[in-house]
Image (spheres, rainbow, N blue to C red):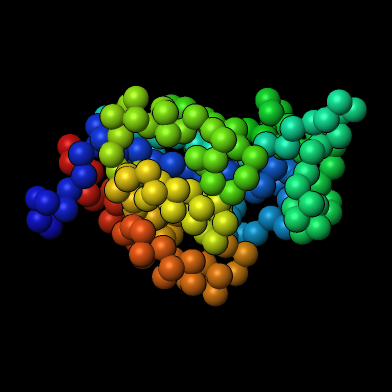
Length: 205
């Protein structure tokens, strides 16, 4: 491995997109609605060692948490397209500060900063960019769910903000393999596609 391929951990952040209890944990909103997938549920065990390694090397870990804000009557303010896709979402799902809203425990212990988001991208209407720049971050490695949704949007927004972008191919998942593979192929125009193992191997100690 050439020296130029190594990453400076002090200037590298892992951005974990939406690996929350309501999305992937048994008993969460998506599990209740039959929309939790085994591929997504397998991600925390794969991503946690990467987050731990980056932290140990002096890197930064951020997480986004999809959030459904309640209206004045306590009902979730759900975008029409999401309501059509996920009619099972109900009062109490993805509410800020609840157990369902939280990043899964295996990852939460490694997270430096969490941002609450209302759309696909972890940058949209959040303070993620401000935090990363304050932390001196130049390289962003994106993982989480879904590859063709939150991951793709976050990676593209990071690219537009002039971060060096990596997408962890086996650190994210989509509803099906075809969508996952197509999204990764498309994201090659804005960043590098690497495995979790390859990313860990490029962290300079």
